Structures are given as C-alpha cells and as structure tokens.
Amino acid sequence: MALSIATWNINSVRLRMPLVEHFLKVWAPDVLCLQETKVHNGEFPFSPLRALGYEHIAIHGQKGYHGVATISRLPLHELTDRRDYCGVGDARHLSVLFDKNGKTIRLHNFYVPAGGDEPDRTINPKFGHKLDFVEEMKLLHAEADAGISSILVGDLNIAPLEHDVWSQKQLLKIVSHTPIETEGLTTIMRDGAWVDLMRQHTPSPEKLYTWWSYRAKDWEAADRGRRLDHIWSSADLSSHLTNVEILREARGWERPSDHVPVIASFDL
Image (spheres, rainbow, N blue to C red):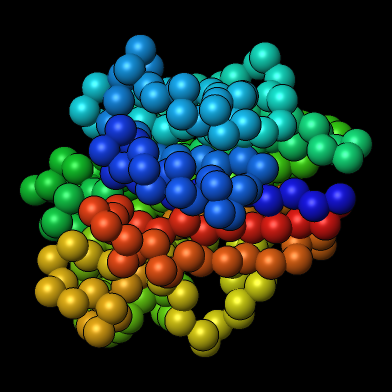
C-alpha cells in the first residue's frame, strides 16, 4: 500500500495558496507538511484544503513569521505535539500521529531558524539561536516510542554534505553550510538513528538542491542551489522507500517560494 509524504517551505501559505492547490491537485500526496506559513492559527486557510480532500489539518501558527502546518488525507490522532524549541515562543515544530497499513507513524514537521548572515554567535544572535535549536534537536530519536515508526521533514536550513551545495569551497563560511552547522545536523541523524531518505535514494556525489535564492537574476541558469529541505525516517520505514522526487519545476512557477516541494513515497 502506497504512502506519500511531501514537505515544502511555502514562504506564506495565504500568498501562495494557488500554488499549494495546484500541487495538491496534480501530485496528491497523502500528507503535505508546510513551513514558514506566516499566519496566525485563526487565519489559516482551511477551506480550500478541505475542499481538495485534505480534511485533517494540524497547525502551529504565528502572525507574520515562521509557522508550520501538516495537511493530511489520512486521519490524525488527536494528540498533537507543538514544542517550543529554545523557549522563545516561535512556531517552528509540530508532530502528529497517523496510521497506515497497520503502522503507527509519528511525523515531525520542522522549520529550523535560518541563522542570519554572519556565522558567529558573538556578533549575530540569530546564528546562536540556530545552534541552540540544533542542539535541542539532538534529543530526538527515531525509535523513541516502542512500536511507533518515525518520519522527520522540513526546512532544516542546513545543507550537510559536500554535494548538497553548488560549491563547498565557496560556502564553507556561509550560513547553512558551515562545519559547526553540518556537524550538528549529522550528529542529530547519527545519534537519533535517522536515515536520510533523499541520500538513500540519490547517493553522493550527485548534486541535490531544494532551494535557489531570490537574489539570482536567472536561478535556473546559475543553478547555485542548496539542499535545505529534508526527509528522514526510522530504519524500519527506510527499507520501504520507493522514490524521492524534488519538484524543481516549482521554482519556476509564478510568484514561487524559493524552496520547492520534496516528495517521499513508500510501499507499506
């Protein structure tokens, strides 16, 4: 039985609702996790999503900033976890439980802080916040709950591997690819028993990007991307992975996000 999970930093769900609707109509994942929704819970656009059959929606919103939402055709358990990482009140995490073909799955949806421009916490508090957030994420374990499988998705704002950026040499001192960030993310994966599904499906040295800057005059020709969006799972699910699709074409849609959807498919 097939299961598909998508993740997408939408950079304002209300502004880009036509793109979300198009994506759901054409690709129709079972679950879509959105980040940077930039909307308070009371103003979230439930109606167009439910009209497309996505009746089960969990949100953790914040006016004008951050925000995550998990939109599902599958029923969600009533228990939803919204963790306040770093204790600053930001809406950056949401986890839900759902069942599929006899498996109970916990799905984490993350929006990790971008970290500002200067990779030095002594002069850039945003970078310090990002490092503290990553440190707290090290407590996550894919096998934390007996009998429950795990998936972790989201905009983690770190491109951990050499071939996750267009030029490792030029980006080693750029926020999102500095050694302290990449080592932090790989520690979360290793110590938490997480499997990087995108790299399981497409191993290095093939380049993988999910984000292209708005600053590029011609993003496609320049192709200076980074893999900032991720899909991980517990080992028991990784063996059922059938495909990972990075929807590069979405970066060229009208008024696009600078991130594109990533879809993981499983045969359960």
